[in-house]
Image (tube, rainbow, N blue to C red; front, side, top):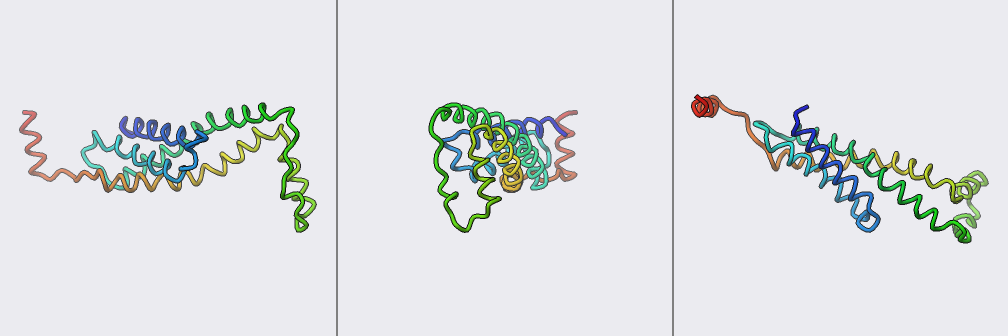
Length: 167
């Protein structure tokens, strides 16, 4: 993999992971994944002689894969801090527990999940569940970036002109 792909994937992945992990701006998560993929495609296209939608998509998928652990590094400590802040507080009543159509197994599961000690486990489950959508939406930005930052192959005339410059 070329260094431009690596730097594009790292910067795009960090942008995507950080912006998806911050609580206030996390509400635009559908925007941050394609934006990170677009950033990865932009950085990867700069030194390339040829660049198209395939290269943009590869850079964006690599950025999406990098974004998942970055997001975990921000989200899990944030959830743990919130759980520590809620310790000693009376537990919030879950309105779903009073639903008569709820099975006993589901009611037991909801009670178990509501306990304070389950925050890290739930955070990991949410991150694993969120990894696939991040990758699936991140490639859209790289795909678009491949078309936006497209560079054509050199023809014979252009290659001769470049060769003359370096002679």
